Amino acid sequence: PAFLPYLSVANRLLSLIDGPRDVILLHAPGLALEVPGVRMVAQSPMPPRGAWRSFDDGRTGGSKGAFLRFAASSPYESLWQIEEDAFYTGKWQTLFDELAATPADLLASFHMMPPAPLVVAPPWWLRECAVGAAPCFAPPAPLRKTMWSIVRVSRSYSASLVAALDAG
Image 1 (cartoon, rainbow, N blue to C red):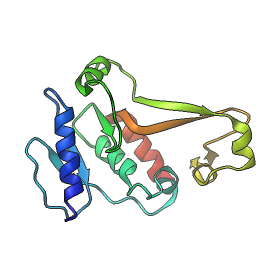
Image 2: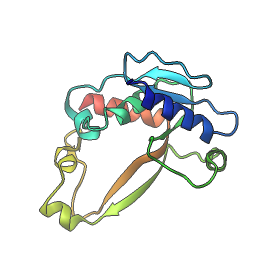
Image 3: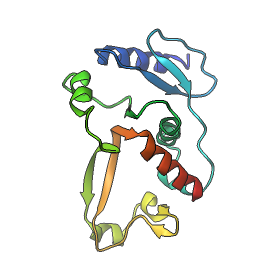
């Protein structure tokens, strides 16, 4: 059945969280599944236009965009997104507790990409990426690419990014 992957993910999330944390699983619309201890929320559809497509192209099912839209309107000051294939060798609770007081709007791993290869053969996501009329990449500066496998965003950052993506 289609709900088995979600059940597996929900149970894995519960086993990783050791302490008083709310666990929310964004899922495909139409799924009727209840897991004790997990708040199941239908993922909002990805807007079919403009900047959203360069941010979250749909190969991931629109999960990054759905997470941002959920975070922007949530009652939480900040939220963590952990992709189902992300692994951490320590206790998640320790990681969350260590970073809880950090006031940053975005906590994530990132890497710097040198500009030369990107200018010669830019990947699709870079060719289509723009914030307003400005391209996301302006050589000769290197590109900083955020990794979304484990990320914490604030509600205010999410709201600002959602508004910018909605505006195109």
